[in-house]
Image (cartoon, rainbow, N blue to C red; front, side, top):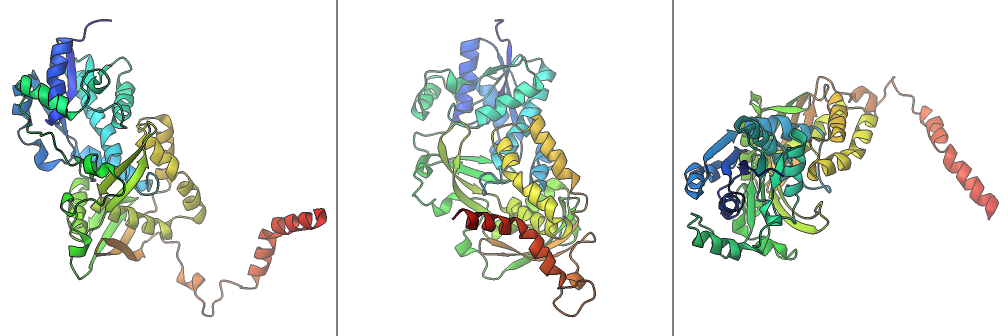
Length: 402
């Protein structure tokens, strides 16, 4: 096998990727391009270029993927009402394919023959990164140090960093790890590994503690166009700005906290705590918009496929033909999902209190209990008898055999 000449490393500037940068240069004797995606980490990106070059990177590339992340990954998943195991809005799972898409563009631009990442051999991210990379370049070589090197944990990395003069601020004690993007902030590991332990009150950054949230509810109206959120209280926003604004509003009311034990793709259980304020509001409002614009059978069949869609995304199969097939089906019914949903935010909860659409299937003149000329209630008797025919036949069979 030919020696590796240039590696594009997914770089965050933390302990792991700082050590990895130095380790790759030593082990593979190659050029390393430190690559970072901006998917909404805010101040976490400050000073990364200097830190990367001080650690030995030949160059540093930072790519602004915020619009692509929200428009091409978050919104499609929200149109599909994606929830993994009924609770997780897939914040990290959706960011990874967006990141690897941008990263592989840089691989092509700089003529690299390999990529490197800091995902561990126990997690899902290694799968997400590598399946995505294979989609864009089936010949790409992948360096995953946590599956190769002799280090066993953070103490080993800290010692290596000290010996090699790597500028990191990590300490041996870290209460938990965090991953942030425009959709969510996730917490796992450390003190959260005990599933009985309540997360500390001061851990959360995007959402106020519901107990400390305003004592008065706040109402907002979220406008949709073909399944996508496009306005807040009548004011139009581009995707990134809309999600950011919703994060601020919903976060102020403590909306969007989830504490779950999820099933990792590699086979183990993992406890994750997530803050997804804006995404939670969009998810609830979108379902409400669909409730008056989609046919009953469209909703039933689509809902049966939500676990499948969500599992594909969670397992790193965003670029698979089966996910794209499901997305095509989901999007084919979204043309009529337009209108306005009114929600109430109050101490950690988001409640739908109104919905309206020019494409509504809801007809007050059909559903009313008052006198009407469009529905003969006597017809319901035949409807029930026909639907109950198979149950009557089953009952007669049981009677015959007893």
